[in-house]
Length: 394
Ligand SMILES: *Cc1c(COP(=O)(O)O)cnc(C)c1O
Image 1 (cartoon, rainbow, N blue to C red):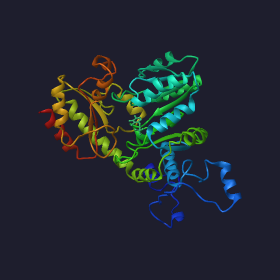
Image 2: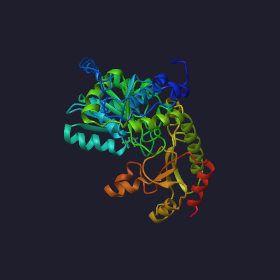
Image 3: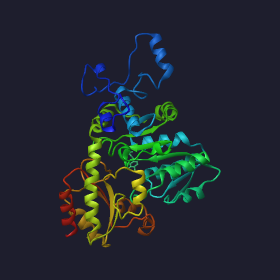
């Protein structure tokens, strides 16, 4: 396969050896737990490199491996490992790099469960120390480094408020200081952002979002160097056992075919919706890195080639009943967590926060009662705007 080909072409053909599958245009699903061998010598030889040979599906399966090759190729990494969820990938990547007593620098507003993993679970189990920075200024990171620092964990754009970090600058700093870097690239996807090319060590994703794209799977992936992925494969992947099911890998293969055009449409619709909201009198603020009014718009244009479909906005009203009237009044946007699928969704982060914290305490995270997160789907953009407009008029 020529590396001159553009990514849309490679997503259709890269890694597919149709002669091995009787010419089937869709690679078959290897729905088997184990692989058989002809002799003592053959299985003995296979065990010489468990990361290269098919022996048992908790280690390696052809339906999964093909998708790993395609995703690594798309993201510009040497290799990739798929997991049973985004959190399985994230926890494995973090455990791979940390030792007890290490210090981690991360940004405010990282994905909630990642935050709980670092700041509650690993703090308790492994005495991990965590420092949060705004992340909008490289000096934030410089100031936070101690002699125990081992890892900088990024999420750009971050959850809920979509703040960016200067990825190339952080990667450069980390290399100078001998630190490792991980980025959660779920929002932008490798279609729009290539952190490995900017010097990041490991890129992680929840494939439950745009990689899957149809709201029918939960999955995750780590992309990185051959050495890191090999180490993760024989340690965190095989030992903790968070494997990807062959059928779900097969569904991701299906989804990869349309990922470039889906992302274009999510971007187009989100732009239209964000522009409408920005100009609506009942909306106080829109957080969408694709808007020219977004405070870090220039950085976004520098390090991303496009903007996906997840954004948030703040309603001007503060009365909870009025907020609920809008929320419950939407007809096309469905109420639900998660995002990145074909359908438009709405969620109010306050629903989660109110269970754990008084309102004053989550305000400093940039979240208010009227903060609404929407995942803009693949419906007609005019219909989405009409739906928001009628609910805002209720
Ligand atoms: C959903 C999500 C995750 C976790 O992925 P799961 O597949 O749900 O485990 C991690 N990071 C971000 C930014 C997410 O949105």
